[in-house]
Length: 170
Image 1 (cartoon, rainbow, N blue to C red):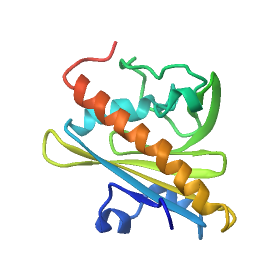
Image 2 (cartoon, rainbow, N blue to C red):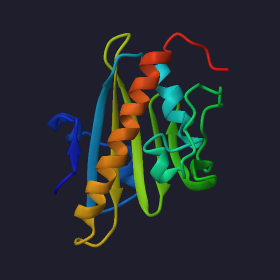
Image 3 (spheres, one colour):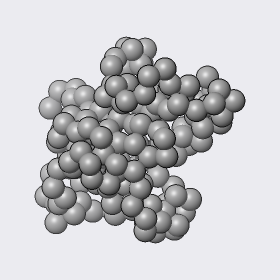
Image 4 (spheres, rainbow, N blue to C red):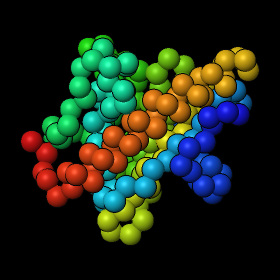
């Protein structure tokens, strides 16, 4: 499918993701990944902060409000809490979490898992898989749209984690 893969290897596509348990036979499966020159514990702090803002193109999905560029010291997320906030509205729910390892949420019928894979002490692979039941004609369009937004989000997490490693949250 067009736009279903960005920045991931065949082995990263083949692995199991927590979101796989929530959607049987998805019409849409999309994988994204980025290499982050920061330890997983630093990357986790940014991923967990998705509860505050979408961290993609703020002018599109956050009504121009800038996603926070500093860590605010949130407690670890819990299943049942809101997944994110966009445009001042709480959206989605967290359905599964293993602090420091993975965060899985659902929003608008899609389930997505952010998975952190440590690569040595100071590098991390940040992987994202999105699954959804949808019509077969809509899946390619949703995949391309998600690619644009998810790519920006992962690159923002990468930049923020690399820039802020070693800094304690406020």
